[in-house]
Image 1 (cartoon, rainbow, N blue to C red):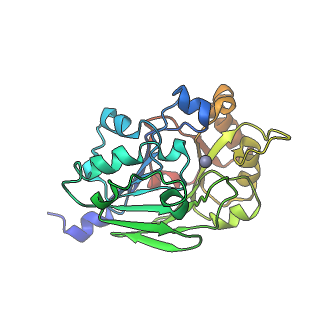
Image 2 (cartoon, rainbow, N blue to C red):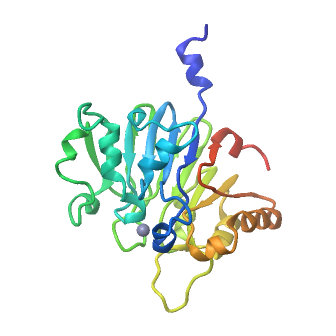
Amino acid sequence: MTSPSKEKEHQKNWIKFVGTAGARFVVARQLRSSGGLWLSFQGVNLYVDPGPGALVRCLASIPKLDPTMLDGILLSHRHLDHAGDINPLIEAMTEGGYQRKGVLFAPQEALEEDPVVLKYIRPYLGKIEILKENQGYSLGDLKFSTAGRHRHSTETYGFNFHLPEATVSYLTDTKFHPDLISQYPGEVLLLNVVLLAEIPDRKIDHLSFDDVKAIRKESRAKTIVMTHFGTRMLQADPTNLAARLSEETGRRVIAARDGMTLEIEELIKDF
Ligand SMILES: [Zn+2]
C-alpha cells in the first residue's frame, strides 16, 4: 500500500480546457465552448473563468467533471466570457447552498462596481478573497500569485501557479506590453489569443497571434498553450498556426481544443 505522502508525490497536475472561446461573437455563436479552465493542481480543484455554459459543459464532459468536487473558483475579471456561469457554478459547487464551501477569488470590480456574483449566493461560499496585483494566495496545498494589473477595460489579473515540477502561468486578457513576459515566467505559459493580428485604429485590449510570436521569442517557457480564440483566429486554424510556429522556433506551441486535457509533466519535457 502506498503511503499518503507517496501518493501526493505521484499526483498528476493537469488542466482541462472546458472551453476555448474568446470574444463576443465566438461566445454568442458558441463556435467554441466558453467554459474556461478546470485545474487540478496539488490535489486542489480550481475552476478558472467560468464563461457561459461552463456548468453544462462540465456535466457533459467525458469523464464528467463534478462541480461538487471543486475547492474554489478563480475569476480573472468580470467580462461575460469569463464570468457568465459564475453563479450557477457556485450553486453547483455548494449543492444549492446546502454545503457551505469553497473559496471565490475575484477582483474587487467584479464584486462591487458592477457585480457579477449575486448577493444571495455569496453566503453559500466558505470565503471570498479579493484579488490584488502582485499578491500571493493559497488554497489547500496550491500556491499561486497574481501579476501586475492588466491593460484591459476592467480590473484584470493573470496568475502564476507554483507547482513542485513547474510554474504554470496564465496570461489572461490584456493589451500586449513587454513587461508581461517577465511577469509570467512559467515553464508552461497559457495565453488568451483573441486576435489574429492587431486591428489598427481600434482600441482592442487583447493579445494577437503576432504578440504570441514576439512572446515565443523572448519567453523561456518550455510550452506555450494558446486558448480563448476570437473569430479570425478560428478562421486561420489555431492548430495549424501553432504547428507552424513550433516548427519555425523549435519550441513547443499548442492550440487548445474544447475538452483537451494537458498534464503539466508532459508540457515540461524537452521538445
Ligand atoms: Zn476580457
